[in-house]
Image (cartoon, rainbow, N blue to C red; front, side):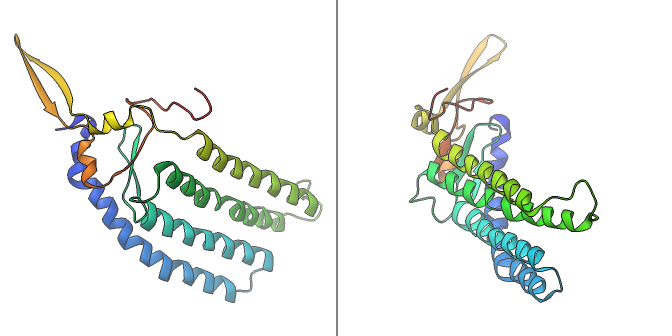
Length: 218
């Protein structure tokens, strides 16, 4: 058995995650999301809410396509190590893959918040103190969007592998177990087995709880 139960990941969970994603993405891309867009486009919903729904669902299509087919990130919990099993993992650097993942993730935020804000405003009475002018709503959306973009910037600029990444991936860790007065040196793989699934590793630390170094300082 491996530390932290990683033998379960090796023997079952990684392949299970790959299989589920490969089943999930065609269903959502070709059936679920297009059906939602069709129903919303034919509904009597107000045009602003309709646009919000369609934009949000369109971004979900890109997210599912990237996350479930191209990227397929898998964390080796609780170690700060991520592997990539998607179609692009053999050619694109881990940092770039994670940055693109942040793009499709945060892109869902603005249309969702726009939709929630418009629905909230429509539910309020005309004299409600929570009623906002159009200009105020625009300012809020600009603020939220800027915040989301800052997240992408952070992913791109502060995500770096640790200097000992290759050593950590390739090493077979030696451990000492004491049984009575005899010490047994056992060789066991910690994360080496993950090479059977991917050559694309993002390693943020050597041990549990370590999340550095960052690209722009500690």
